[in-house]
Image (cartoon, rainbow, N blue to C red; front, side, top):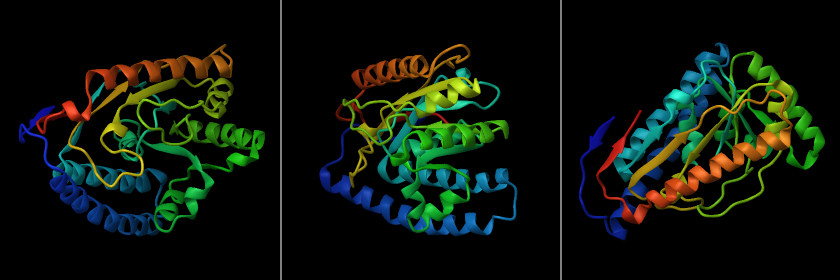
Length: 264
């Protein structure tokens, strides 16, 4: 943990646009580069391919800190189990999709099948063996999640689940989907909840990235043995939403200064 020097004043709108433009230009250029690297890595074991993904994430977050002065602080790493399990994460931003592999390695995502159709990003994501669901399939999608999720867990991978299903704006709530909890019930693996306030700095569908410090909280694992899926889901949702509200109350972007603390 170290302090990142900076101004005591919030920058004006032109500076925010300029910083964000610099970030987006490089970010967009990196996607095809790393996607092609992932596709070329197909002969190598999964762990080697995952290292390419992790390098992309770390490079992106370092560039974000340099250009937009957006850092992060994480608490609760001592709660991370020694062996892989299931992660239920708050979903407010693109930011968490990049950073969760800092603490949970290697991992497989649960994502919408349509994301694999995106040029470059989807091709690279396909190489990481995600669990790509057709959410309109209903029970069949849940059965696919359970079957493929158990397979990935047995291979020693974390399963990343965003139970809200889509990014939600800070301060709003949506129904948590049951699929990840069904996987937890049937597999018996614990669920580790993750809360954060990334959406306050990197909002959904926003060009501007606000400077400050994203707060990440990793909760104690929720044991799933003997619990029904609804009970698991309710317990995880309660912790995530309570902790997210607490973070937002303690810290908001307009209260942040350009001096911030970052943990790796």
